[in-house]
Image (cartoon, rainbow, N blue to C red; front, side, top):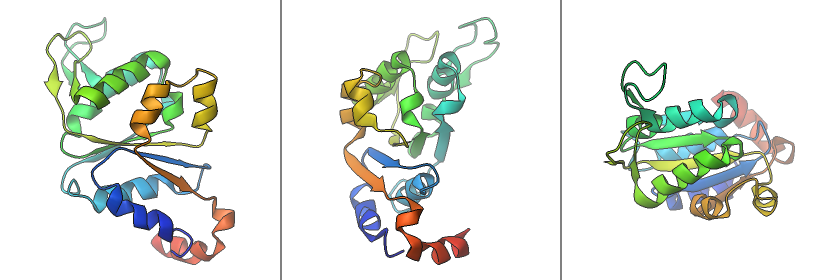
Length: 180
């Protein structure tokens, strides 16, 4: 794909580190995330994705970090979170800007310490997961407006990738059609 060559060139650089992909809806952010995963040493391990816009704060935290039995009313059994399930692989956080501030601080702690504590738990568990995040929003403006944590933004933005909209990549359309 000619117009995306600069993005493809970043894939090798992004193979082991945290990545932030920005671009309009429908620009191919998830395809880029999957390509990064499949071209990395983590390719034999899970690639899990979560649509952050589709979950409430409580459910988001439980999905990411898991919970212990009895942690809350409906917690009838231990539940491993996506970070734990993706151990060794990649977790793709689509629409990262939709994560509530409280959960953002817990995600930041995970990125710094590489360990989680399930909801209702007391024991930290070491996890080796590479995070790829994506957004269609202007995350820098959200940081200025204090709607997104500045420290989390810097932790996620190790390798920034901007995906141009498809209308600027008309030469890519035939190849994308063949792929899809």
